[in-house]
Length: 162
Image (cartoon, rainbow, N blue to C red; front, side, top):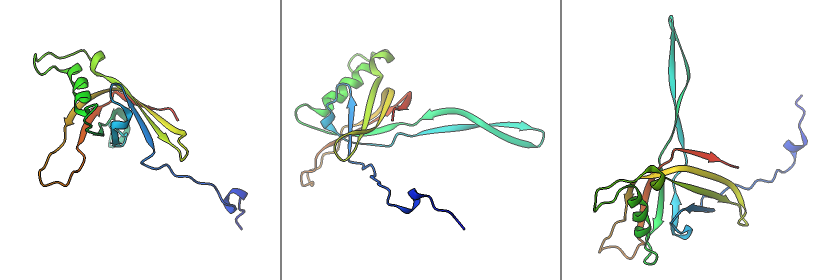
């Protein structure tokens, strides 16, 4: 006969984290312009070790995947202008000059919030550089949807603080 523990019998408080409770801090981009963000993810390669007629595996390189962000395109401050200032740190379109990684790589802080606005988890995205930007679509047939800017960044690595 199975013996039940008290924490298995009684009600356990459970509060899920919700996708709309977060704040994102990116240098130069106001937090209120951030509409959404993709998942922080990584992949790890496997290295095969051959021995006679068997094959074993050990972990290879860890690769942090790109992260996408969606920003509102505001009139003031212009979201596209703030994003282009970041892009220009890595490449100036007029002169063709590129910048040092110390200039265009930034740290980004993601904070997940609880129901009362308390910080319940925090990711630090280290060395993020922009890999692509889409400044939004415009259409005469639309009824007035807000313009969104999507940027994709490649981090060096990410740290989950809590």
